[in-house]
Each structure stands twice: as C-alpha cells, then as structure tokens.
Image (cartoon, rainbow, N blue to C red; front, side, top):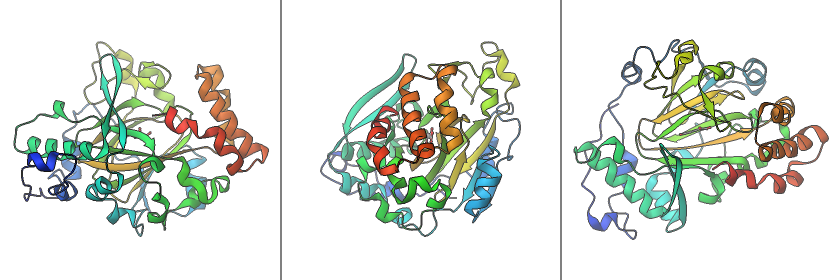
Length: 344
Ligand SMILES: O=C(O)CCC(=O)C(=O)O
C-alpha cells in the first residue's frame, strides 16, 4: 500500500464546522505499512504465535457455527462485506454531511481511567483530518491524536445503516436476531493510532467485528489466559500488550498473544471472553455486534459467580429469556436497548 501524497493542509475554513472542502483526503488515507512490516514493528516478545487465527473466504454459516463458534476459535472472515454498499458509501465525507452537528461522546484512556468529552460530529471529523495532516508533516505526534468515537450504537450515527448492508451475512447470528441484527451493532470511528486497551467484552458475548475503512491490528489472547493479564474493573487489563513490563506483570510471560490485521471488508469473530487490544493502523471506521447463543447467554447469567457486575447479569438474563424462553427479539429488545449506551 502506498501513501496518498495528495493531501492539502486543512485550512482554518475546512477545520470549521461548516466546511467539508478538504475532507475527502481523509478517505484517501492509506499508509505505507504492509502486513509484514506492521507485524515486524511489534517487539519480538509481543506475539508468541503469529498467524494462528484462521483466515477464511466465503465461510458457510454452518461451518462458521460448527468449527469456530462451538469450538471457541477466532476466525478472520476475509472480504465478508464484499457487495455491501457501506464499503464505498460510508466515507468520512459522507458521514460528516450525514451526521452533521450532532453531539457525540468521545473517549480518552488516561492514567486515571476513561475520560469522556462531547464534540460536534462534523468538528470531530475535521479534527481527525487536521491531526492526520499534521502527523504526516511532523507537526503533531501520536500522543496528540483526537479522542476516540468508541462503541456508540450504530443507529445513533447512521439510523439507515441497514440499507447499506444489503449483502450482510446475517446467517452467522442465531435466527433469533433475525433481520433486526443491526439494532445490536456498535460503531467505532477514530484517527490512526486510536487504541482500545486489552479487555474482554463485558457480557461474555460472542463478537463479530466488521471493518469498513482503514485497517486495525488486533492482539488476541485466549480467555483462559485472563489470569496472566492483571484484570481490573471486571473487563479491563493492566498489561500493555504492545510493550509488556515483565517486572510489574511477571505472570504475563505465560500468556500467548497473537496478532491479526483486519482490512476494509473483513470480519473478525471473537469467542466469548477473548481478550483483545486494538490499534488503528489508519484513520478507521468499524462496527461490531455483541451477540449470544443459548449457551453463552446462560454462561453470561452465571457470570454473577465470577464477579460480573449485576447490571451485566441483568442484560444477559434478558437475552437468555429470549433465546431459551422463546420470547421474540422484538419483545426483548426494549429491555436490552439501554445496554448499547451502557457499554459505551
Ligand atoms: O475497534 C476497537 O478499537 C475496539 C473494538 C472492540 O474492542 C470490540 O469490538 O469489542
């Protein structure tokens, strides 16, 4: 992949909330980091078993369920979104115009935890654009990146998302989710170098993650290795998997992290409890769906025995009632809806 050199420096007008004149450049953004190079930039001790996540093209839903969901194995679903209009339509320019001045919460991870700030969406996209330009010209460093639009309900940004996801592989979800799976989706938008620290998904759901723009590198650790990762606040881990400090975290030597890169159009399946650290390698747009099978919903309810917060147990109970008790998704969703904002 080659660098796009046709960037113009954003003007103060383009940086203002009312103009989108230079924003198309954000969509043209690509870096010169090939897959091999990206993996080589990781310290030697950071991944112990590269490439052991299967990469599959056109995986049938039955095989997905038998080989990966039942066996608790992650899998990269290559080009699974091919044929969805979203891949070409959801440009940063399009989003800026479409979402406009709506206020959105953004997250920043710091030493004292997660800070949330509120910004106009159009200003946020302008800030990403300006940062990416300044980073390339050496006027900004990684640390100055704008905050992360992280884990918001997809429909809060794109109420009509479903119409651009016409060939979406909804058969990968249990039939209970039906045609309304998209109501369970969460969106992520951020500049290059956005990071989500090591964690697992808080309801112990399965996760199908989809990449629309830019690339992300996931560092994955199996759920059974949680005990080596210094967990706190239920789902987060203290270890910096990109630069482990073995003096502070000696047990982490026993964990077996692996790395995988997700490109536009790809999907990534993560079994319940899989630990993941995510770095954006480009300015990126993604969405995910946290979903349960009967088995994972029941295990999720039993999470109360492992220290799962009670509110999470409530959401798992609601979905378990739907999946195991035969109550339709439509009737259950109103009781679950608040989870989508709770998780963010
Ligand atoms: O894309 C990201 O930065 C985080 C994704 C994530 O943590 C998830 O899908 O659970």
